[in-house]
Length: 129
Image (cartoon, rainbow, N blue to C red; front, side):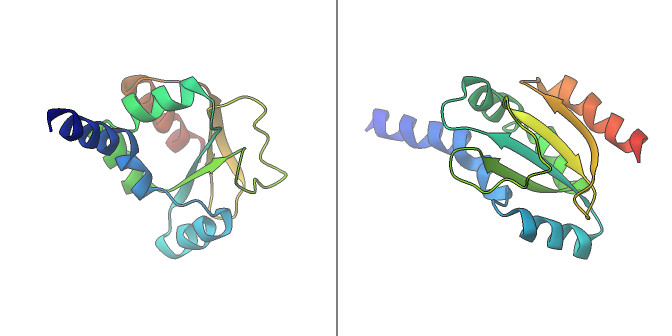
């Protein structure tokens, strides 16, 4: 029973953030326009250990998710199963894109970042607009 509880708790931590993310590029742009927000896009892949670490550490951080949800429509696309627009170049993952509601690039970064460092990149996005 303890094992089952632990497994449920671990899966909610690892996958709980995904409920906040959209998996459709066009729908994300639509929502961004209607909500007058920009888009945060993370491109990932199934076998990316740094993607999983970013999800587990940074996207599971309450303050990080609060900051992202306030300013952005959240979008995650997998190179393995989703259609990624041709203007989004993500040869290596995790790749993070900050886009305006027309899909134009504001800022991008590559890799795993802890919550504090990632927050500084989000602040850079605000400065680039």
